[in-house]
Length: 187
Image 1 (tube, one colour):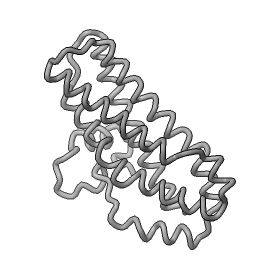
Image 2 (cartoon, rainbow, N blue to C red; image 1 turned 120 degrees about the vertical axis):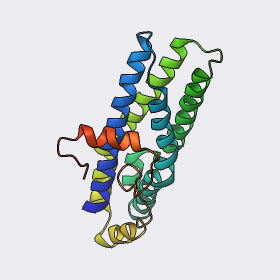
Image 3 (cartoon, rainbow, N blue to C red; image 1 turned 60 degrees about the horizontal axis):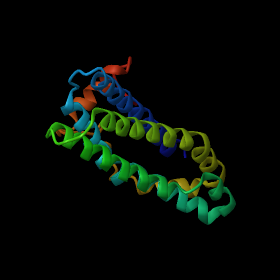
């Protein structure tokens, strides 16, 4: 259990750092200055890729096992699947808004900034709920065998912020996260 939950918590912390970076760029935009659109788009590209492809499916797998073991406990967590779908849709909305802004198609500054704030707040609330409600329930309900099975399914889930290999994609984000970690690594 510890390895799986610790990995998800590390990814939550990394996402928090990305949200902080995004918030700084939105503040630049709100002041009427030009934000680093490449950085904003890279953050959103990551948010469209990794959470839906790897992070959320791991959590969905854990939730499915909780539902099998203790349906009442699963109800306390809420509809995590629906939250993941809503986050995905909100990410797409913000990505499209950013693309429209870069292309200079008609959009008000306030609408863009409000869409950004909605995205950031939704992600922060989602992460807080999982840390507060979901992970403790999972720790109580699931057995060592459950965790071993879940862990065995994670072999191909590589986070491109950490396990990049030679990949240049998300290099700016990796540097932002590694550079903000006083120990020089995120693990």
